[in-house]
Length: 444
Image (cartoon, rainbow, N blue to C red; front, side):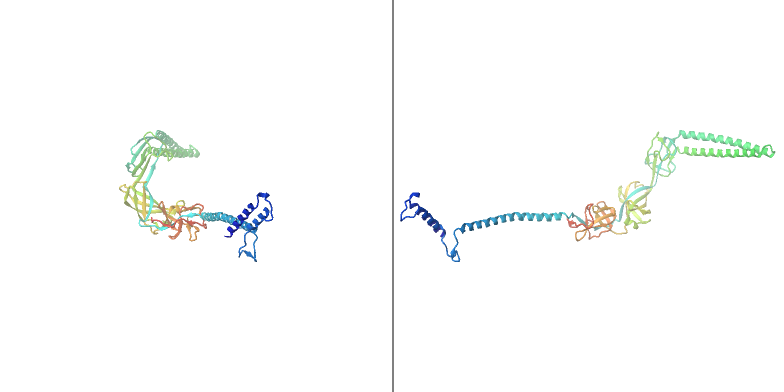
């Protein structure tokens, strides 16, 4: 209402100024006001009319303060807009930086997966891989140089002790034997002459026809000839023994498992030459197993066991522990055990693979995946995550190895959380974050 009345007053003053004269050359009369007077009146009329309540100490504010107040208000509004814009731009970045810092703090802590040990079963006893060997075996080499003349026993032949296997032709050895026999005949002739001479000189010594010194020399020549004959005879016997090795025979009853020569092959005496035959005795077998060190105290001679082979998986052969090495191998940390198995029907093939089941007197053990083990200079270790998320490296004692899982005979409990696939840089005391909840393994 106030604004409209002010605008109407301004318009009336301008209309009055326009009708008061013709432009700037309007005549001035006593009854009319000059043009500039009219404009002054219009300016005064344009001033806002004071309103009750807008006065301070009974006086109205000057009209010149209105534009200044508007500029202040506009400045305040602009400042608030700038502050709001800065605030709206800073808060998201601050929040994003805070989230990134928290994420980096979380990433600094490695994440691990854990598993808990479980108790394995022991229904089948202690099952160990076995190496099956014949009770007796021998590699047959030549004792005389020559050429293979013939062979009469091939692989798979069942031979008896002393049975002929092959014949070697030894021309050089035959000539050496003939020479040695001729030398023996010569030595015997020299001995006969020495005996006759010695007898004559002894007779002459009785009649003082010869000196005692000459008679003693003839007696010594007789003894020398006797020794020469014995040496020649020994050489003949040696060569005759070598010639007897022309016949290659079986040292014991068994089966020929290898024939490595053929007719006409060059034969060199000794183990440096080629192996001629290999013989094994499969009627009785020696079975070797390696028992882990924690289970070694439960093994003793006379203990019974069973043997199974891939050829007869449904049949178990009776076995008995005959002896042990009584020492732990420094390489494999196992005890070598020898067992005896009767094989009269030759159902078990020598040098085959088998499994021996021994009675396990130590009871079932905990099992862990094989990928939880750490191979360190201090021995086998595992990483265990504590309640506070810290890692503790513990040494463990292992038992049987099942491939994907392995027996643990000491070092952990079923309540421990063991790290799967630990890194080589894992050390005790570091903080980790468990990625998955502990999973129970299937008993092996």
